[in-house]
Amino acid sequence: MGDLWLGNIDEDTTDDEIREFLCKYGFPSFDSIKRVPGTGERPAAVVTFDSVEPHVLRRFQPRLHNMLWKDRKLVVQVMPERHEH
Figure 1 (cartoon, one colour):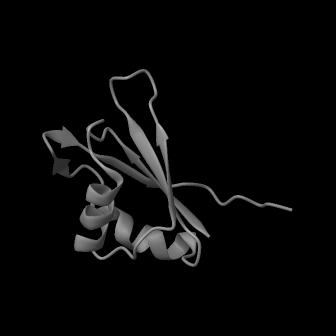
Figure 2 (tube, helix red, strand yellow):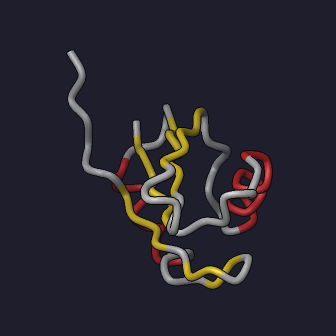
């Protein structure tokens, strides 16, 4: 399981727009999404890929990090692995 942080996204961006954007740049379709409002200035989302390992996401991450999308410079990072028991 891998999680991808998408920071500084436009708060009006829909989940479907995020899915379409990621797929356009080679990412598989994510399994879940969690919105992170932050302070309101730089909303974010964490998208989870149930069957994709973090090392695979790291190969795709540079395609989007610092990209301008919807007049915002994205911050895209692979989240540290979670160890759930």
